[in-house]
Amino acid sequence: MRNGRAPFIAGFLFAPILLYVVYVLIPYARTAYFSVTDFNGFSPEYGFVGLGNYLELLKDEVYLRAIGHNVVVLTVYPIVTILLALFFAFMLNVGGRGDKAGIRGVRGSSVYKFIFFFPQVLSIAIVAVIWRRVFQSNDGGMINSALMALGLVEEDKPLLFLAESDSVIPAIHLGDFTLDAPVVLICLIGVAIWGGVGFYLVLFSAAMQSIPKDIYEAATLDGASRVQTFFRVTLPLLREHVSVAWIYLGIAALDFYALVIGLTPGAGGGGPNNASEVMSSWMLTSAFRSSRYDGFAFACAMGMSIALLTMLLAGAQFRLTRSRDKLEF
Image (cartoon, rainbow, N blue to C red):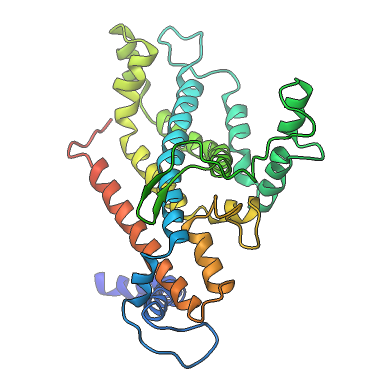
């Protein structure tokens, strides 16, 4: 039986494994190889430089600043997104009235879930067009128009959301490394949160709906309030889902490429004056818009560093959120 089943299973696995090797593993291997050369992306002749490109990364002020921006995104984006998604999911599933046990969801919760989830169906191009109009500094930008109508902003001095490079926190300088949070970067994080909350709201809602109502009823009979029920019942049972969400959001925070390219000024995004530059956007600029002869190899070294940081983040997150006690219900 087992011998007869093996060829059948292997036949199904062969195609996806082959595609994974060709389109994932081989490109990663070639990127790692080119990262230790001076390959420029065009000439078939190139030499071996060892770790020279990686040492150059430690001297690239823009790249080090981009790492600082990714750290800010990695800190703010996952935390705020998960907190908002948990709050809204709990309100939709356990925040209604009319049930003696207090476990009924709000009326029309499916409609609210659709509204929250709707940004997920929009392409990044549409999101960029919408939010460019919202943040626009002239010609009827939505925020500036509202502030002008309230008399909070003068018509000849609109707020420059996507062109403002001042940091909202005191910049921290550690050698060439700079940790700051420019206004334009905070605006991009806000857009990312707007687009991501709905997906994780649905994820957490599905997890909450799988929790037996008997648990909530027992907590209510014991006199637990809604807040106590959330922290002592719901949140511990959602530990694994929160962990998965944190990893996905962390990977997205280390990328953040699409929003930077779509919303910020400059040919490769990252403006103004590299105020919204992230590692992935600077990698693109270094590969295709740099005056360096070995710009492509230099960008490959950036790509490998991003991959390494992503794997370290995922490993650390699994380690920190792993629970030895399996909660079952």
